[in-house]
Amino acid sequence: MEALDKETIEKKLLRFPDWEYFDNAIHSEFEFDNFKDCFSAMSRIAFECEALNHHPDWSNVYNVLTISLSTHDAGGVTEKDFQLAEAIESIVEVQE
Figure: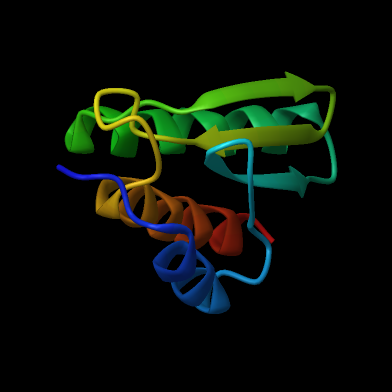
């Protein structure tokens, strides 16, 4: 899978208003009501990551989940990152 150019990434991000492109990755931060809800979303996201065989750089502090997506083998953002971002969005939307 090839890395997308900056213009293509910016255009695709129009569908993902909670995501930003910088440092050669797309990034988002999600805030939940509490740690349990955040961890629950992370667990559900983990199953999607395994299904896609694509894993994010992410961190969690209490009720905040920070995610960065980039396809390391391609050296940048690919369609796979947007597929995972879409899955993440649907999981987080259900949590809210």
